[in-house]
Length: 353
Image (cartoon, rainbow, N blue to C red; front, side, top):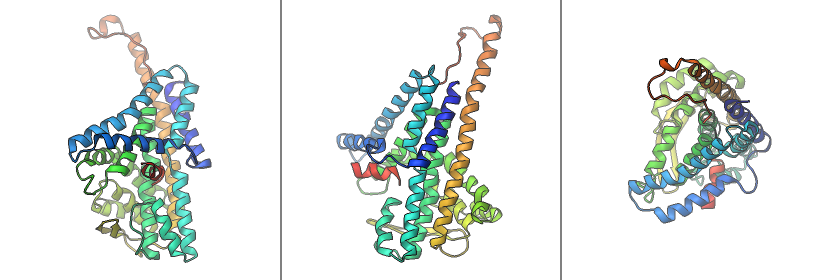
C-alpha cells in the first residue's frame, strides 16, 4: 500500500470514526490548539495587519510542520500513515456533531421550547439569540448547517485528499484561527485580517464543491435539483462571504426555502440579501437540511478517497517512466530519484482561550 492508498484508507477510517462517535469528549486536540493560539495571541497581539500575519503564519505553521514531519517519517510505513491520517481526520471532522446539534434544535422547537433553542444556538453560530423567534431560529440553524457542511466536513476531506496530514491539520488550524480572531470587532479589525483571508482562500474550492454536491443530492430529501441549480447560479454571489453564499444558496434551492435577512450578533447587526424562493424555514426544514448535509459528506468522502488513492499511482507512473529514460534524454543536472509521497470543535477552541 503506497502513500496515496494509505491516505485514502485513513480518510475513510477517520470519517467512519466521526460518524460513529463524533468529537472526542475529552482532550480534544482542537481545544489544545485553541489554548496554544490564545497564548500566542497574548504575546504577539498588536492592532496591525503585519502582526496578525505573523501570528497566523506561526500558529498555522506549527501544525503544518508537525503534519509534514509525520508524513515524511511514515513514508515507508503505510499502516502507520493510515492510522495517523485516520486519527487526524476524526479530529478535524465535525459532521456528526453538526447533525446532532441540528437535531437538538429541531427537538426543542418541536416542543415549542424557544428558550432552550435560544440557549443551544451558540453551539452552531455566533448570533445573538435573545430576540429570535421560532422561524428565525430555524433559519439560523439551516444556514449554519449549510455553511458548516463545507467548513466541518467537505473542506477537511478536500485538503486531506490533496495534502494528507499537513492538509488536514493546516486547514483545521486556519479555520479555527478564523473563528477566534477573524471576525469583525474593534480588537480584530486589523489583527485578524490575515487569518480571515487565508480561511476564505482555503474554502474557495470546498464551498463550491459543497454547493454542487448539495444540488446533486437534493432529491434525497425531496428537493428539486433543477430549482437548486437555478437558485445557486442566481444567488450564490449575493452573500457577503465569498464562500458561505455557495453553500447557503444551494441549500435554499434544495429545500425550497428563502434564507438571508437581518442577523444580529453581539454588538453588531448585518442585513443580508435573500437567497432562494419560497417560505421561511420551519422545523421540518432543519431535519431535511441535516439529512442533506450527511449525504453531501458521504459524496465528498467518496471523491476524496478516490483522489487520494489515485494520486500516488500517477506520481509512481511518472517516476517509472523517468527511471527508464536514457541518461542522454534527461535534462542536464537532473538526478534520477524514486518518487516519495510527500461551530463545531471550533466552539471548544474558542471556549478554551
